[in-house]
Each structure stands twice: as structure tokens, then as C-alpha cells.
Image (cartoon, rainbow, N blue to C red; front, side):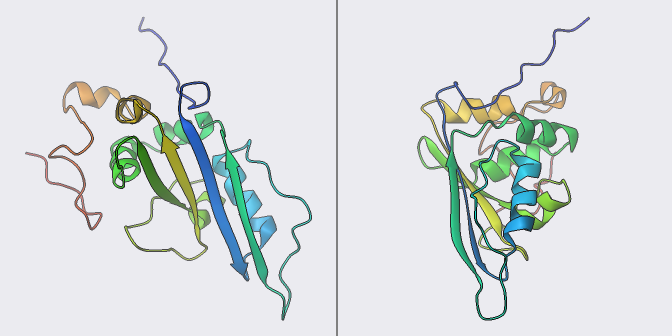
Amino acid sequence: MSAPLLRLTGVGEGIEISIETTLSGADSPKKVAESILQLFPEFPIPENCEEPILGKGSNSNWKATQIDLAHFLKMLHQQRILDTSLDAMSRKMNGDTTVFDLSRQAALAGKVSFPLPDEIPLGGVFTVRLTSDGLRDWLEAATWHSGRDTVPRKIGDDNTMNADGEAATWI
């Protein structure tokens, strides 16, 4: 019998976690709240956010820090998108910090989706910022799966997806 998988959360692991989204125009605070809670159930939803009406659109910025990433990481495993996640979450890595976006519309449907670089999908995005001295190792561990025993993966390796989001060809 194999040992249970280690489940990382980010909290208490030396990682600074920031999750942010901007509501503007016709963005419904109710729908955005429903969406973010699908990925991050502990995200504190601001109170007194009014739904937009004709002549008065949404205009707010929601931000929270040190949100537990366990549910989000579990979704990556369940949806079997671990290699894509490693690539997308490390694409904008600079030193010990990375920033990546998540589609709010996909989250509303209970799915994790990383928009293509420099594209803002219909419905907007959540922006996640992670900072830690050992972030590279943490990301690789958080997205590890048994297939990496056969095809090892590292951040920035030859199997990383192309800059336009297309899959790299494995030889």
C-alpha cells in the first residue's frame, strides 16, 4: 500500500499568497463571489456590494491574502491539468514571485482555466500572486503526479507549453 499523497496548501508553508479581482461595469458581485468561492472557499467576500444598475456599474477591487490553496490545488488534481498548471503558474515567474490569472467564468462552472497570455476572457479574471524563497520547488511539488516518474517535468524545461499556449511536442 502506498503512502497518502502530501497535500500542500500554501498557508504556513512560507508562501505569501495574494488573490485579487476587479469588478467594473456590468460585473455582478453575486456572480463574482460565487465564482471565486468555487476555487477559494475561504476568500472573504466584501459586504455591501451592490448589483450594477443602469447608470451605475460595479466599481470595486477585491483582494485577500493568505488564502488556503488546498481546494484550488485539489481541483487541479481532479481535473488532471497538473502539467498545464505548472506551466501556466510559472510562466510569469520572476525570481521568487509568480503571477497568474484564472478565468472567473470557468470558475463559475467549477473549472480551473488559465487564460492565454495577454488575453482577458469574457467575465474577467482572478489574479493570483505567490512569493516564496522556494517557490519553484513548491510549484513542482504542488502539481506533481505519478506520470512525472516516466516523463520528469521542471519549470522551464523542454516540455513547457509554447508562449502562445500551444502544447510542446514530446519526443
